[in-house]
Length: 229
Image (tube, rainbow, N blue to C red):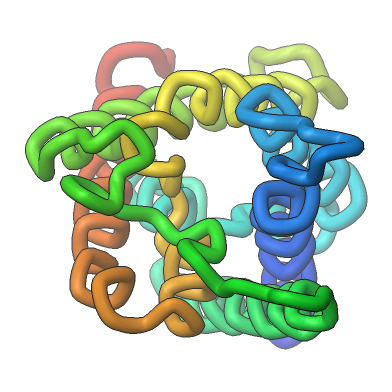
């Protein structure tokens, strides 16, 4: 498969993840007649990954996340030449999704941008968690996310079930960390909304690149060293 087609799949898949996950938070979570809350948003993110992995996994591997690409590179599951095109496509897809979501959300009378599903710490953490708590949370949960991804896609694992395990893992991650950081574990997903919120969201965006990538790269070294034959 050509790199152009694979990068296009990453763009579309990350678009779907950001639109589905952040869209559920912005449009549905606080809607009086629906009110899906933390549980609904968690499932929305998991379902976007599950569906995108089945649809686009055969094309690009459905990373949909720069941290995942970095982690798979550390585990020697992807070629280094794919890193930059994949990450650019993922970030582009997330920005396009945030723009689409803004166009939809701003059509409501009395629209208030608010946090727009952005990630934050301190005063901008849903639970007012400090920077250290947010950093540890993002790094450790991304580490575990990559362990699940590497294990579920291991040649010894049952074929065809990886997207289910990965999607359910992302649901669990959101159930744990929405109160802490509004859950990133994905630098692209964080970048899209942050560009629209601006200000504090852009100032704090560094954490949601550094912590997930560090966690993912650590898993990329640990899994082969400890668990592969």
